[in-house]
Amino acid sequence: MMRELLRNLIEDKTVINYKKWWMECKDAQETKLLAILCFYDIDDLPEETTAGLDKFVLDKLRVLSLLSLCELSTEVNYQEIKEKCDLKTDGEVEKLLIRAELFVDLKIDSVARRATVLEYKISRDVYSGEKGVPFHTPVRSKINILSALINWRSSLTD
Image (cartoon, rainbow, N blue to C red):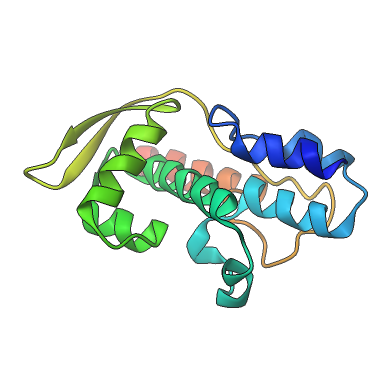
């Protein structure tokens, strides 16, 4: 893959799915970066990895991490977002929430310092074991999702 294409994909605010390019990529460094964008959140990565990422990648990874958080709960508070997305201020949280509204409809309550997920428009990539990943098995893997669905179904019948 040409580095320019990868840079354009990262800088494109409308792109959150990278699996197609990850599957096709032959360059080891680009494959690792694409795997990070596909399957990991910022808090999943070793500190030395995040330290080596540029501003555009970190910004994209923060949006992706927020989307992951929104998948887990219909209501997220600012503190959870700060921790999950490596942010310091409420202003940074609100800017991130606004950027994420391309992918999820939110009701942002600045006074209560929380956001409510109204509708999820698109999901992140899911790892299905297609090829190796640079770190631990991603949380958004086919196996984990199937396991969660089985547990959910069991809880309904208990």
